[in-house]
Length: 251
Image 1 (cartoon, rainbow, N blue to C red):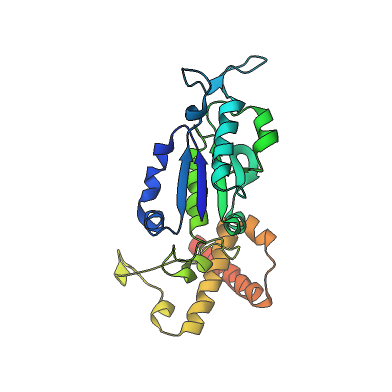
Image 2: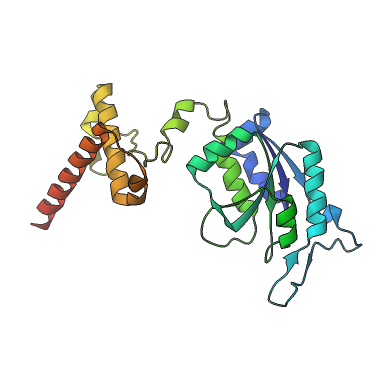
């Protein structure tokens, strides 16, 4: 998968050279190319921002250097989708990541200051995306979040591809609790079922725990998910057990 990145601070993306994404870059499973808008500025001072028309605080990124940078990036991959990272964009989530990963070629425009000239958005931006309802100092971190999430769908990036399918939110549910050695830690032991070796029962326990955790922590996800008959049974069991345990604690 190829990512073209338009940013005033391309050095920020060095952190992607570590871990799973770093290995993917080294193995050419994902590629990143960079264009700095300052390289396309039209004056000797390399100006890329100016005061907003109509007044107001802060500065606005100018359309001309950004447009030139986008056109340079599209010369490398003409079919690439141009994405502007913006708090006004569509909310990025796991479903969106899986869908975007099918495109293979994406250009990310990381804005700064008070945003970018609206005319550039109208002329050059294909999609606007947001990673959450909060404000960052720039779009670089948002682009890195999206690249990390998208890279997981590229074959070979994650060693065990089944783990991608079982991640939290991949099925519309939060993931079940995980345990590893030691078997006992601070007086708490691993659930017996996970030590039993009965894989069918383990799968049932994990699905039930996943449903229950989603019910407790993210009921909004359950409201959007159509549960199977088995899932309804397991969720009902979890809720009944949860309420019974809470009732005992209150006695």
